[in-house]
View 1: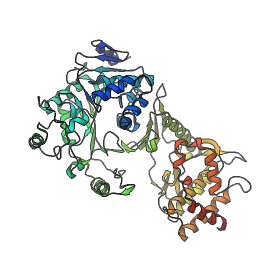
View 2: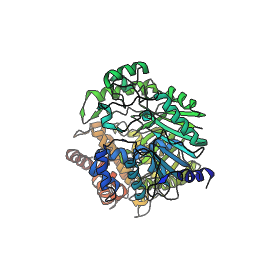
View 3: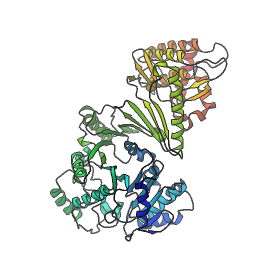
View 4: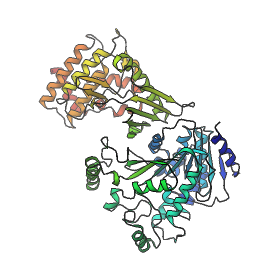
Length: 344
Length: 239
């Protein structure tokens, strides 16, 4: 066992052990889920009576793909893991990345604030007979990672949510009228989070960060901001996004996302030595195609289906725009998503 | 590294190309996918041994202890893959090269069974002038198919896409089909055994679906419409 592998059990000893694989920090009140608390309670009530897959099929079949699809994990290959690493998955939710990752490396810690999601992930680990994965329930802004412990850190679709202070049910988040806290500067909160991740990595350790591109071409054509649900807020300057958001949502624009160049700078400011950016289509969740940012794009083909049964105008136009932007002119600046591999 | 394919047909296999190191990297977490990578490793092994010039090509299979994850490295072959979506008339040259290469490569076992590529489609054949490299050995099995099966499959798959969903082929396509079919038939065992016909092809596939798993229903040669089938029958009979 390498020294970094010994550090993880010592770190977990600081927390209360709730079950075989779940540890709890002193703040387990957080909530971020696609499911409401009632839906989650229903899911929890049948967990253990059948396989996790069947539980989702019975209660929330729409989420089956996003939780179980193997397509979600393709990006991990960019790390070319050796198998002896200790990894941390920050904001691991239902274990979509955590579980496959545990099949590839020596040890994995999944951290999330939603206890229901962790119980679900624990059941998945049990099913797959994985004894090298543990979970920690707590707030990502509060848990201080142990110094130089992890060889790999995963931040998959999480950075943009770091500035949110209150419980989130994704569907209510867009249209809910609930007044939400605007305390703290989103950029500073994200930076503090990244510095914490950097601190937890061993020297030469790597962070894989996946996030939407602020200048995704679709946002210019009236597709809503993927988090705030408002129009054009990601592409305009922050002061203008704040004004627009205050009119429509009665609050600041907080789920900040970045362009390729901005993300590169952000990660270097957080202390990372080198950053390798990748552009993904149609998004980082279920990528069909990933290319090193800025390099030749000769294997690219538009990822929006030109026709889906019947010929429809929107996909056709999107397909042709993709073809022009990315195949003919190779302007990856407007690619939908970014996967960054940053080395400490 | 470029991700070029992410679990097509839900097969659980990720395919990356590393252009700098000229290597293709395939990996999988699923049982199905891991089995495919094992087939592919065995297939390339067989193929590279048969081809002295390919003998030093990179081929490595990395499995973790628990067999929950596999990763395969294979040399990246440059050249242009064939295009099965073009008409058979356009593809005549490529088909003839494929027939010649197969004939030189595949061992004949008197009355016995030969190795199977299983996805011997123009898209998996990399042409470099008159030479040909065969890739994508995910369905490889040693000694399970009659000699020539992959060629017959190739011909009928190309014909399938030539129909373009219509009921008939153009005269030029018909002519090339008959020519290639003749070239293949001359190489097959003359009496009794497996013949170059749609019926023999689909009969073998139907009797051996395990070789393709869930993909068997997606094989183009299994998808001819009744009208297309009738048209082919006439063409096969009258030449």
